[in-house]
Each structure stands twice: as C-alpha cells, then as structure tokens.
Amino acid sequence: MINKCEMQLLEWIKAAFEKAFGSEHDWSWLQVQPASDKQFGDFQCSDAMQAARTLRMAPRAIAEAAVAALPLPETLTKVEVAGPGFINLTVNKEWLSSQVESLAATDNFGIPNVGKGSTVVIDYSSPNVAKPMHIGHIRSTVIGAAIDRIYRALGYKVIADNHMGDWGTQFGIMIKGYRTCLTEEERENLTVDLLERAYVASYNKTKDEEGWIDECRAELVKLQQGDPENRAVWKRFIEISLDEFNRVYKRLDVSFDLYRGESYYHDMLAETIQLLEEKGLAEESEGALVVKLEDEGMPVCIVRKSDGGFNYATTDIATVRSRIADFKPDKIVYVTDERQQLHFKQFFTVCNKLGCETKLEHVWFGLMRLPEGTFSTREGNVIKLEVLLDEAERRALEIIKSAGRDLSEEEQKKLAAQIGISAIKYADLSHDPQTLITFTWEKALALDGNSGPYLQYAYARMCSLLDKYADRVENTAPLNNKLLLDTPVERELVLKLLQFPGTVLRASEAYKPSILADYLFTLAQLYSRFYQSSPVLKADDDVRDSRIKLCAMAAKAMNEGMTLLGLSTPRRI
Ligand code: ARG
Image (tube, rainbow, N blue to C red):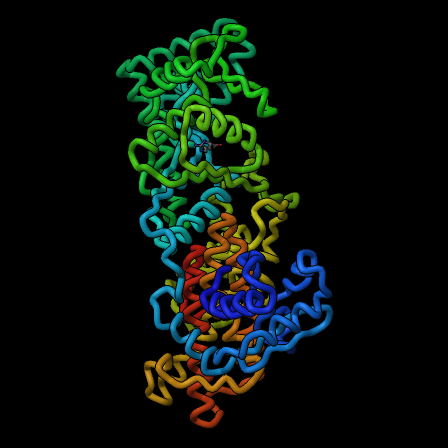
C-alpha cells in the first residue's frame, strides 16, 4: 500500500471483506490500486479472484457480497462489480479535492517522511584515480545521485560517499611510469590523460622488459611504507584526478559528503584479516588467504594474495566495518555496473559471516551502448565524460538558436547547459537501470518523446500559463482557488497527482529512479492532454481559477520530481 488516499479506501474494503466473510480469514493482503481504465472508476480492487481460492466461491459473488456488506463511506459515490469480480470504486469530488490539496500544501508534494531516524550510506560514482571517468561512472554518478536525493527527500539521513579507487598495485606501475615514461614538461603539466598514458606505457613494459615489474613492486612497497617521495607523487595523482572529477561533478550538480577512497582503509586491512582468521572464516590456499563460499555457490573470496597484498574485497570488508562503526547505518547501498555483481555478493556474504547486520544492497546497472561513431575519440574507443557533456551542450545550443528566442548569448549558454546536461541524465534515468540501453542524441534531445527536454518543456509551459494568469488576474496564489473537477481529464490529472508520494517511495524501495521518470513522463503527457482540451484563461472565472490551480499543482509536482532526478527546471525555455 503506498498512497494515503488508497489507504483510506483499503480500510473500507478490508472491513467489508471481514464483515462478509469473517475475521477468521486474513484480509491484510488486500489491495486497492488506481483504476487501469478510468471509465469504470477511480480505483479498483481485483483481489476477489485471489480470495476465491480460500473461500471456494465464484469471484464475482465474493465481490458482490463484499460490497453489499457495508454501507458506502462518504468518500465513495459509487461501487461497482465488473467482469469476473473487479470492484471499481468512484470517489467523490470533494474528497478528491481535499486529498490533492493536502499534498499541494506541503513543501514536497506529500513525500512521506518514512526515513526519519534511519541512516543510509550510498557509495556511488567512485571512479579510479589517474584514469579518466568512463561511461560506466556517469551512470553510477547519475543514478546514485538520484537515489541519494530521493532518500533524502524521504527523510533519511544520507551519507554520500565517493569510494575512489586510489590504492592498490596499479600505483607501483604508475609511479614508475610517471618517473620514466613522461618528459619533464609533461610531469609539470600533469593531466589525467598523461597519467593514463604513463600507466599504459609502464604496464606494457612489465610484459616486455625483464625486471620492470620488480621495480614497480619496489615503488609500491615504498609507497605503502610511507616513503615521502612516493607519497607526494601519489598525492599529486589524486589531486589532479580530483580536479577533473570535480569539474564533472560540478557540471552534473552532484556532491558528496565524503571522499574516502580505498586508501582511507589501508590501516584497517590487517585487523580485518585477523578477525577473519579468529572467526575461523579464512584459510590458506595455495599461498593465499581465502574465505570459502562453496556453500553459497560462489568461488572463494581472496582476502590476501599470495604475495601478501590485500585486494578489492579486503578493502570493501574493512570499509563496511568502518562505516558501521562511524555512522551506524541501517543500510549501505552501492551503485556500480553489472560486472561487479559477483564481487558484491561475495563480500556481502563474508560480512554476514562476520555478523554484520546492516543491510547491504548492490544496485547494478547494465552498460549503456553507444552506436558506432557516437563517441569515439581519436585515440580509440574511450568515452570521455567531459567530451560527452560538451557535445550535449553544443547540440542543445543549436536547438535553442534555431528556435529564435530573444535571449542574450549568455542566457542561451546557460539554458543550453541546463537542457544538455539534463538530457544526458534523463537518457540514463528514464530506463530501468538493469536493461541494456542504446544512447542516441536524437532520443536524448527529442522535444516530443520521453526525454529530458520534453519534461522541461512541459514544465516551462505550465510556468508560462501561471505567469500569464498572474498578470491578468493579479492572483498570485492559485493554490488557494477552489477546484471544480468537472471534466474526466481534470479528474484523471488529480488522480495522477495523488500517485506522486507513493511513486517516490516505490522508486526508493526498488532503487529505480526510472519509476519516478516514468511517472513524470506520463504526468507531462496527461497535462498536455488537459491543456489542449481545456481552455484556461478564456474560460469562465470559476472554471479558469480551478484549472489554473490544477496547473499550479502539476507544476509543483513536476518541479519536485524533476529536482529529485537531478534535472534542472528552467521556468522558460
Ligand atoms: N572504483 C570502482 C570502479 O571504478 C568502483 C567502486 C565501487 N564501490 C565499492 N565500494 N567497491 O569500478
């Protein structure tokens, strides 16, 4: 059960079933949903079919007996049984108005405060130092940030932690590459691209040149033992990478509470291993230390390699312990691409074996496919995020220019950034994260399809109507007007608005911002149907005032929902 209004109807339905068939049966599973076809009612209950199994009666007879058992509550004007046993409920206008008014009167359109008192750590974006962020990281960043905002809106205390890959064997290879494969000048004007080049060159030498790998290892040991020179170089790698990451975060309007990279946990690794040994969970195997996960149907989880080094899983186990100690979270949510599923399953299982009670959730997404040529750089097929964002803004600017709006150069650029970046985000958020999607500019920027610009355009149209109304009627508080709700589309719009809080809740429970995106898209479409069929400013005063109130409510829900997804909401496009 998700929306307050449905809850009230459900109470009546439950009471009716209980009256008709007795309280010895469990009726807690009954549900009321928005009607799929609004012709027959506003809400429906289709559980008579299910009840038929226990009651051994025809579903239609069950539905009829249930609705006859109790008088109609004031809320309902009509209850009808249809087809094989659907119960269709039609609510009265006053109730509908008061329900939606109570949502519109809140700051966030009625999003329930279910998270009050709970803490959630969300680990997202988490790119690797000295490597350019790739397309997988944009998905983690955009999806993670939307989940982050949704949880905050629900009242959770959220700790957004960027678990950057800033530690590990690659740094030995990198330090060596930095010292030997770059020119003095390149070292002075270091960029992430140069670092990556140095790494690749050095890595190739580990295969071609005898002794190279040992020298890299020696650099790593020095780094780990705190050698000041290697530490300084490593710190510089992090600084340069962070500069680049932060540029992207700024453009995406994303921020974190913490940037605890893997290195933060280095000193906790030994004690984590010790704990695993004490609890008898880890054992030697071919020189390495492993936790066997045979019973769980998984390969062993290596926690210490045969060369004595720790690995990704060890750090993640230590990280969970550290987060629990510091924040006592109710859950920790990780957002990464699908390729890491086994890793998460493995170390979650190890954490459970260690007695961790915090809920651990891996939210994974499929990689986005880019059609050939959408994004290949000269060097190869690496998709650089910043290039993607630049291109989005450039294309949005072209569209703005061709629309011929009277805007200064600066205003055009600002709008292009808002439209372009939101288009990229929405292309990501509008799909179920676990499906394979193919990105195309045409879809991402389409003004007439399921796209970011479409939502922005719908919202701007609402705002422009509100502005016109305010000019003409000099009423700046349309939310105080009286609702009439005399046409089917108006009713439908209100019923849709009533679904907003429950939709946000469902998106949080499923970790799928796409649920909210779908909702906003249908809301925008419905609004557009309403707008096209219902004159507002030219209507009689009372109708006009009621319709503008609907527009104001739709705008409020739209704005709230888009903001949760991280989309910008310019009032004019
Ligand atoms: N740095 C990793 C990568 O780029 C993602 C880290 C995800 N978070 C974690 N706690 N393992 O693939």
